[in-house]
Length: 98
Image 1 (cartoon, rainbow, N blue to C red):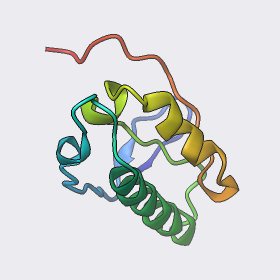
Image 2: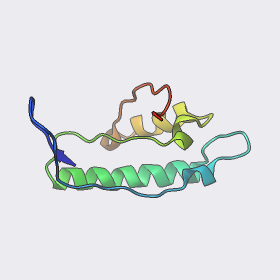
Image 3: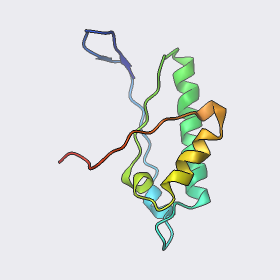
């Protein structure tokens, strides 16, 4: 979490990360399993609650390659979009910087 104002430098206020090991939820066809989707969705919901408690204006999440490269990544994103409390938008990511 950062305190950011237009034209100013972002000031770090908090950092929240979770090691989810989503790659372990990929099946032989490279689909993220429902259990993996549920785990991810649960973490996002918890994070959103924290963001609201802290009165943040915006939450930005980053998907790991397990989500981005999953054969069913569109379905995973659609799961979030169907839940109004977890609305999200995605940006195309070509490759991770070296």
